[in-house]
Amino acid sequence: MSSVQINGDQGGHTRSATVPPGTLVFTAGAAPIDADGQTVHPGDVSKQAAQCMVNLSAAVEEAGASLDDVVKVTVFVAENLQADLSVAWDVVTEAFGDHKPAGSLLGVTVLAYDDQLVEIEAVAVVPA
Image 1: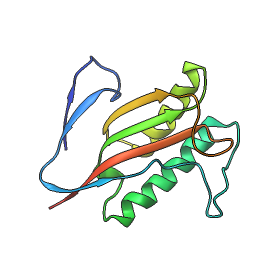
Image 2 (image 1 turned 30 degrees about the horizontal axis):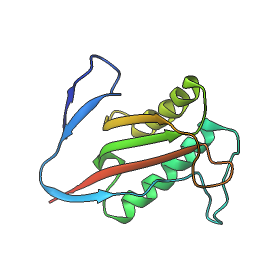
Image 3 (image 1 turned 135 degrees about the vertical axis):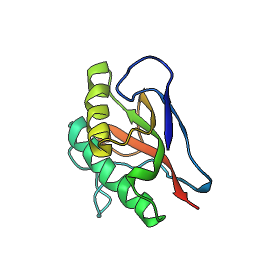
Image 4 (image 1 turned 60 degrees about the horizontal axis):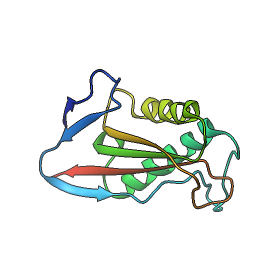
């Protein structure tokens, strides 16, 4: 994946990504739910973001990809404080390590599950 900085040095926050041909994988939003379908860590943005990344990783792996194959990530945070968005973003960028997919970070009013504060969706490419 090649990437281009488009809004100055934002530590990977705003980039475009170009990938060689392959199979595109579009995930639904990964929620902070456990194997029983229960929302975990109510009220904790950081821990919910971490669970979302675990669930997102499992989803892309099922499709034959890994987090290193993610080219676009969108993080939704249902909180009023901009600082909470940054907390979620820090967890996401840590999970990706040196890999920097294009990303968007959005504050939203409400998400699908009771007590849910974070949801993460992605687009990955399984190389041809």
